[in-house]
Length: 224
Length: 314
Image 1 (cartoon, rainbow over the protein chains, first blue to last red):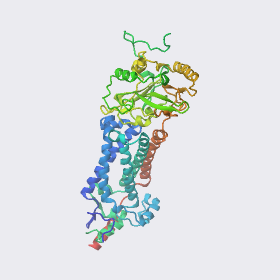
Image 2: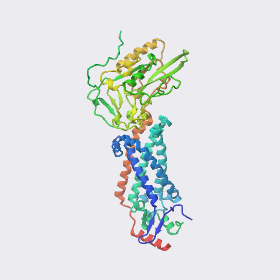
Image 3: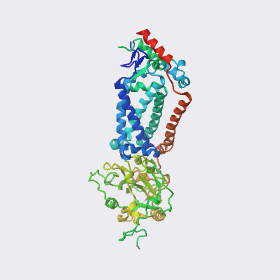
Image 4: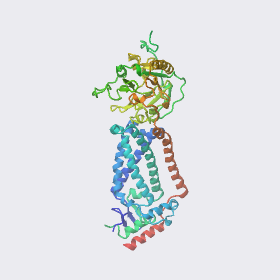
């Protein structure tokens, strides 16, 4: 039986050091399209969010161009993230040990991995990031359509647009904060970024951070 | 006797503009130095009891601003066009109302357009520096070269006035003929009005004129006649004299107590600052955490354990 958190392409290569395939080329391309979209959305969105950041519109060719392009990047992000969602949702299902892991956040932040339960492909923090992103992107695209006046202005009332723009801005700030957690974790936990650039991690990295996943892979639960 | 607030004819010689960048009191998404002089606040008074619904004001507005409203459809009412557009910066709204006290049919005709609020919601909501400005005489004006067409002004406005052009993607509304007022003229609509239902002058003069009109209406039995100068938006520089000032909603839904929506206040107030603070705090926490804890590194022993595990199984 294949474990819930083994994804297609996950594979262990014995050697010195052990190398573990973590993300396929398609998954990585999918991730980086999403990442670039999210960064461009944050920059163009923040430009219209606070006057002190209006200068960021210069990156997009001015205020008019920023206003015009922001929602289209949002559409790209939505479909790109949908791809990631379809790839990753199963391995991000919440399991009992995730709650234990999360309750020991102090040990997580002080890097006492030995005091934490063994983790599958994703730890509880990654799962929180995944589900927060999923929920926030749905909120952002839904409210985004309501305030995309040039095409959809006539379908909603002004009062609905007011509510939508407020929710959109709060959700945007939240997703930027979630993104900071995501990026920081990748920088702090050495060996992680390689997973999304080259698709591989070392066996030691998998042993330290995702031991349950590594055990499943070497015991053949991943081969299908 | 000549009408007291008759607007003068334009002069034939060149005259200098009396309304410049130095007269700004507010500028959207930016700040302005305090103006060196305070201009006399101006106002347009629209006396609904005198309006005959001729639409001369609409025609004069199109004419002066060099705008052309595309020919539309007859919707079975006198309203034409049915709503404000990027071309029609003012629109007459006709309401037929049977007064339950007198059983008379009253034809209430309101000239709709920008009210030039002292506390303008459009300006508050605008994210583009200098796209909306307010002069010390009370005029709120849109500066098209700075407008980005986002439609935030529509969300900020308590009167549903601005309209975005599909041609140049910028927002349009009544300018109060700021270009005419800058050279000592009154708005085109006021100049064209054949019954002096639209009068222009200083806000003080207009309030005085309104008071005499309201007294006249009250003497003629309209006990609720009054002035519409809503305090919720700090007063407006376009005011109405109404026979039924107790029920402004009768006049095509004019809000009784307009104010900037609380949702807009929340969005442009605490959300704006708390949002940036939250993002900054998260970043700072990251830096501090890294400085205190250092990187989370994989040890050689862990690589060895992984190797043993992989070899055992293979």
